[in-house]
Every structure is written in structure tokens, then in C-alpha cells.
Image 1 (cartoon, rainbow, N blue to C red):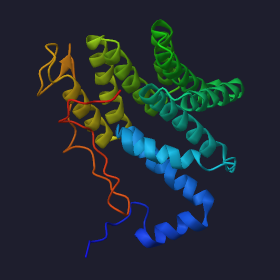
Image 2 (cartoon, one colour):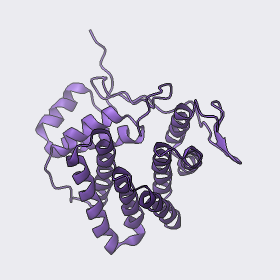
Image 3 (cartoon, helix red, strand yellow):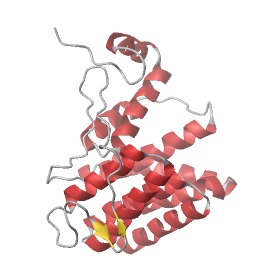
Image 4 (cartoon, rainbow, N blue to C red):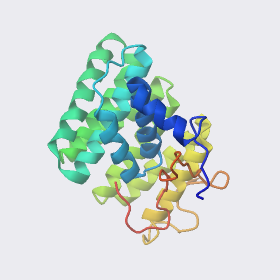
Length: 253
């Protein structure tokens, strides 16, 4: 018999299945969390699959503003990434709705929301191939995150800026932003994520002359490996393994 893999949500597969089928709100959060973790560890296919499930629920998430904000923010970033991979306009529209909601919240609290709005704006511009506008929006997101003391937003903005610059062929700039993301994730305390950024950079720059494969660096700020690497995460059925594609030449941005 197949050995059951413990669920990261605190219960085994059958109970998990019952929860998903009997409690739509819990099911939506379950799929959101899968989508979020997959997004953060650059598992595109796991993320896209969970996103399809998540967006299948038409439920009000206004129980707490912070929950609504996180779901809106992450689902918008996910949507723009999926759009760039699929050219399916429904994902662009979903991302645009998230950006509009964040702009509305930013009118009430620029400190909490403005940097998130600019990151969504950057991803929208990237998706539209408006590269100069995207460059400015990433800069705004990073600077505001720094000014507003949101280390997590600063790290994520630097990481996504890295993928953007790599995609448009600006490899030196890309490595600079990956280096900053690596450092900021570590400063925030997200050691596994910091190492994941290292591994992603190692994978996509392994054939590049601008960095050494074993220790990619720019100037005096090397990208560092913290610990042994990111965790392998499985969801009940064992099909949700998160991979950074660190040894793959097919790296999706």
C-alpha cells in the first residue's frame, strides 16, 4: 500500500478531502495557500493548477481586510505570470482587477498598500511589454517598500524585478536584483526562500559569463546560500512537490 504523506495543514488526506468538499471557504483558502507557496517557490505548474481551483470559488473574503489584501495581492501577481505564459486574457483581467482593488486601498493607506500597487502595476506593464514603464514601476515598488519598512515586499519586488530584467536580456541588472532579494529575504528571516533565490539564480545564470556558477555575485554583494536549501512540500496525495528547477535549463519567468 502507498504510504500516506502527512499534510502540511495538520491532517491526513481523507480529512483534508472532506474539509474541501464540505466547507467552501476552507477549500478556497486551502487552494490559495497551495497557490501562494507554489508562487513563492516558482513552481509554475503547481501554482497554475491551484489558481484554477482558487478562482473557481466566488466567495466573499472580507472577513478580515488583511486576508482580503493578501489574497488580492498574491492572486494578482499569479494572474499576470500565468497570462505571460498562456496569453489567456482572463488572467490579465484578473490581475487588472487586483491592481484596481489595491489602488483603491492605497488611497486610504499609502503606507500599507502603495508599494503593493506599484508591484502589480510593474507586472501588468511587463505583461504588456511596456518595459520602460515596468522598470519604473519596479523601482517605485522597491523604494516604497524600503521607505515603509516592509522587508517582505522589498524582497519580493527585487526578486520579480530580477525575472523581468532577465527576460528582457538585462542580465547584469537581473543579477543585481536577485542579489538584493536574496539578502532581503535572509534579513526578513525567510532562510529557505533566500536559498531558493540563490538556487534559481544559479540555474538561470549557469551558462552566463557574468557570474561564476558556484558563487554568482555582483560587486561586493554575493548571492549566498543559507542552509541546505528550500523545503520539499507535499500535499496529502504527494503530488504537490515544490521544485526550484535549480538543475533545469527550462526556467519560467
